[in-house]
Length: 348
Image (cartoon, rainbow, N blue to C red; front, side, top):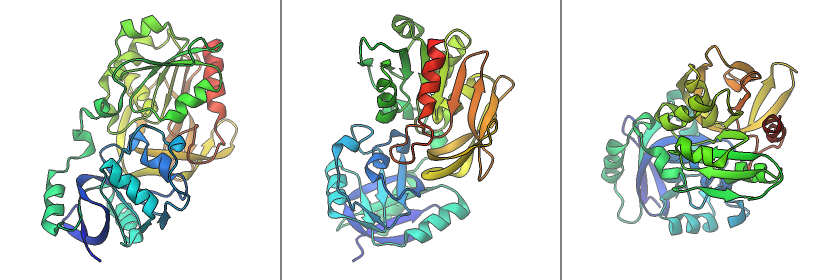
């Protein structure tokens, strides 16, 4: 049954089956993760994107809210070879269009060959190819979403583990995954999650031992306020960052970032530590990378597949960042020690 259409950049039409009705557009990307669909679907880094699952069956262990990384589904739409009824009903309840019964191998191959692309989706009994094309024509490039951080950040400060015996962390929320906060709280840190546009006064009131720049969606060059905060506190307070946070820190210290062809999204990305030569498997979700770290940051870890920077550090300034997600969820826990390292830095 064909009652859904994808219009890909270049106006190629792909037919599918509607599982959750509606229209949407966004950057079409894929993840190779074969578990953790609940975590992926609630990851704020997928804001303004259409998420394609390369694994063929999504939903085979149901939907449980305790696995969510945020309070809502984040992608604009979802594409899979087959979605179970549990996931389809969840997405429909969230108002997120979803389609299946199409060749996702073909979609993934096209993204790998042509890069992440604009896409329009129309799904439901009244959907037409023209509806999907109209959505495609309305779609923006990711760099054009200059206000994307406001869509995923908290609107006011939230404190976790108040009175904890560990370090006090000021976390600038650019779209933070819940597991990052959990990983800090598990180590008895008091975590102050601050809006993306937090002022110096807001941060001073926290009096942090550590400034943490979170992950998030979109082009790091559009996160100017977070960069200004880094510039203000560099050398004064230890600084850590994950994913987008690494890119923001690099830009703030004179480095450069660039868009990747199709990004890293999955749970099996190999990362090599240049100091120990140890390789760990990591969870990743990003479409931008650090092209040049600048003069103040040393590249300490690289991606085995393409040599892109996965870790940046400056011992003198007290900076540690990671491009991948040490908290995983989903994915391997090989790099959880990152949180021990940054909190030790804060205590020192």
